[in-house]
Every structure is written in C-alpha cells, then in structure tokens.
Image: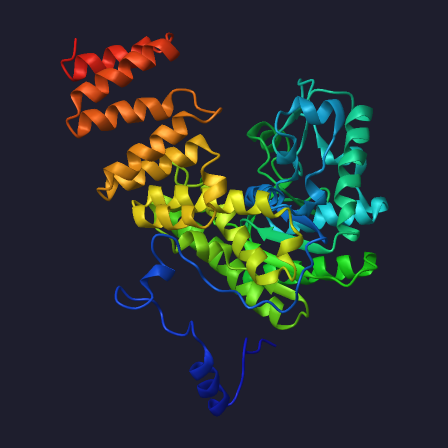
Length: 451
C-alpha cells in the first residue's frame, strides 16, 4: 500500500516553513542568483564525510563526470583506478565499460561482482551468426574481437574493480534512464539495446520495457539490501539522477516527452527510497543542471553532455556540504579547479563581474595560469577597465606557459582602443618571439589596413 512521502501536523509544517531559508522559489527581484547563471539548489545532508574517506561511483555516463570532478577536487575514488588489460585498452576510454544506464543494470553489475556464482559467464556474450566478434550488452555495444576465454578473464578483472564497492566509504549511484531491454532467455535486464541482427536472429528473445515508479523503487531497495549484505562498513550513499537526456527513444512519442518521464519517475522514486533509508541522501545535481542557464550548463557542441565546469561546481558543493575537514583535501588542487570552473562558467554566462570575483578568491593561483589571466583580462575589457586588462595581459605574456595568446590579445586590445603605434610595437615583438605565427600577423595587418 502506498503512503505519503511526508506526513506531519499542520503546526509543524508552518514551523518548518518559517525556518526554511530556501522556501520561496527565486524571482528576478529576490534570490535570482540561485538560478542565474547557474542554479544552486541546497541538499539536506543526513551524514558527513571525512576528507580521507573513499568514494565509489556507479551509474550512467554522468557518474564518470562526477568521478573525474571528485578526483580533481582531491578525493580518493576507487572506481576510477582501472586497468583492464588488452581488452580494456582495445576499446579506447576504458571507464565507458562502467556506464550503467538503468537501476537494473547497476544491480546486475554489483550482484555479479559481490556474488560471483550468479554471473552468467559465457551466456552473457552474444554472437551474431557469421561474425567473429562477441557483444556483451551489459558492457555496452562494444565489439569484443577476442576468444571467449580471454573475454571471460577480462570480465573477472572488471568484476574485481566493481567489488571495491564493498570497501568504499561512500557509494555514489547515478540513475540514467528507464527505457530498458530484457533478455527473456537469461531472465535479466541488459544495459543497452540489442543489435538489430540479434533481434532478427532471435525475434522472441528480447523485449523493450519502460520502467515504472514501482520498478525503480524496488530496484533501489534491491541495491541497498545487496550492499548491506556484503559490506562491513555502514552504508552511506549519495543518489543522483543524470541530467543527460535520452539520445533517442523507442517509445511512440516525442523524445522530449519520453525523456521527461524517464527523469521524473526516477527522481520521484528516490524521494520515496530515501524516506525509508538511513544515511542515504539525494544530491540535487540534476536540478543544478536543469535549472541553470542552458547556454552555460551544456557543452558547446551538443545539448546532452554537461559542461565539465558545471560538474566541478556541483562537486565543490558536495564537498562544502558533506566534508567535515575540507582543509585535509589537497587544498590547492581543489581550489584551483573550483576557481577555474567558476571563472569559465561566469565568462560563458557573460557575468564578467562574476569572473573577477571568482579570481579574487585565489589570486596566486590565477596569476600562475596563462588561460585564467587571459579570461580575467577579457572580463576587465568587457566592464571597460582597459588599464587593468593591459596590465594583466603583460603579466600573462611573461609567464613560462605563455605561447603567444596574451601578446596577441594585447595587440587586439591596442587596436580596439585606437592605439595603433602600440599595436605596431607589439606586432614587431610578436614577429621576433613567434616567427612561425605569421598567419596571425598577416590577418591582423590586413584587417586593420596596417600593411
């Protein structure tokens, strides 16, 4: 029987409302900075994490992004320490093997890693008639052009990595999609769609299934029970929903509508799950992305993959809310990544004062980076502070990492403000120091009639 997510007295509801600083939705006149340029939803941590504790992440491709951001922030991430030998190397970016898109795919991997006798072995390998390669649809659509024995040995290495979940201090689970595939022969959900050749060869073997709220909730409970069974440490878990949308849908509807259902039903199931689970929190990375300015949130070349800078900002928020002793993290590394990410996000949103404010938080780090000095100089140009911009570009040009960018920006800035002779001076210097960059000089001379 279903029950409410929350049920409290009216008096308690009013009391909570009075003490909740994030109660009201932001408006242009009140709290707008909580939505623009990037959203900053606030989670409610039920536990704390020490800086020397380890993380294990599992789930969709967004889990890999969280992994990288945690590592860049100075945290130990055991799921990322991967060496899968020749077969792993043959597929390029090895961590992609670990992308698991549904709650059932996550459960499969964890169960097979922790209870090896349940692993289907060679039965999990699919071979199209007449082809020399195998597909492991739990790993993705990789073509594994190796003997079965070698693939199964590789599979053992892979499961050994996943078994680290039993020893990690914090488990981060990222749910992806609810459009799933079921293998009726093996009686399991698989991670990716079967190739059409396999479907044609065995038309009744595979089914397309769209998970319900109850399916997702049941899957989460199964994951928790499995982990609690095999861990000696108390289970502490962070749950997230991947903001990465469906690439396409197999449902008979608009992919925009299908994707909204996919994310919403998982988000709703998590609230019910955390209601009944101690030390298991939802962290609102999904809301961070979906409520932010889309021009800032997504990578420039698509509408599906989250900007690494926003992911870094999200994980900085996790550290701020959960880590009890952040000074014990590799402080400079963590601060550097956060400051750089904030500066780039602000510049992308044309929030030039935000760029300057972020730089003020770590001036020593900024002045050692050519790229950040260029970013800061451009921000000062945009707010009309040309003098400071020139000083910054001169300093950036003197850095060992400078490869001509600051000097070229200085030339362009001099031209923009009408200082033609100053531009000519720097062009001569540019020719002496960077003789192979004649293309920049020729374009500049032609564009400004300086020939």
